Length: 374
Image (cartoon, rainbow, N blue to C red):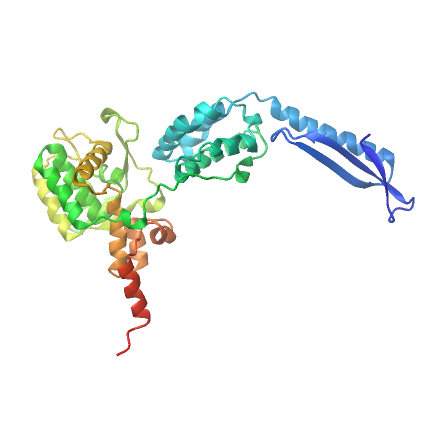
């Protein structure tokens, strides 16, 4: 019996009717209770009960008729949404992480059967990997599930209920800033075995040092992007290189954000380095091999890793960007100028991620606020 009589002082008859019954939620698989009171007659309660059960059953059957797996939804997302609205490098990164961590464990499960328990178990088993990786995986799963909702395969996303844990493998903020002696030691190591490729790597490092450009942006530069008369560098494209062979390298004008396309000041020291490079490098692409073909940034990343390991230091290309931001702040540069040089859409990114204030800077700032007494 799913309709019962309840006492009520507000009703003229002294009682009303309540509809109540149990059902299984089609998404979570959990048993739930439904109840609604206040019906003045048994017939009203009975009619409402029929309508509500039809509604629940229809939703359940509607969801279950789509026998589509998480992997199939991911592939649909790649085809219908990702390539039109996401950066190429983001798609490659998402795909790599999906293939490595998600596909074999969740890919074959019907999307209508994936619930909170499935996701929480997945992340519980990931507790031994980096927490940043787990957050990335949650981002990817959110994209898939939200796409499934858009396609009416499911009607809710349980990921907001899931707790994420993992090991904190990120380095300290100070470790993202290099020391000048380490930079020049790496330059010296590259010069010990001179070649067209290594000479190009040195130029790439100097460009990164003085501009803060990302490695994909540096490797996409052409000679006509440098304006020596007006001391400007035009940044308007980047290289797509993740998972690409040397023959597959392409350059795209689709940047990370609108702010990424910009015009940067050309430091005098860098101008001298670039002018000397152009005298001996006859090719259109600034960073290229002896035949004028693009080089893969991955090769420089590997070379830097190898040299850094031999020297016993920590260094990678993106540290050039972090260090420039920190130099600008520590030298008293205006925050807005810092943001525009680094080409961040949001000024909080400049402050929270790319500036690294050391203990000495903090102490100096404190004594500026409270000068020492004479």
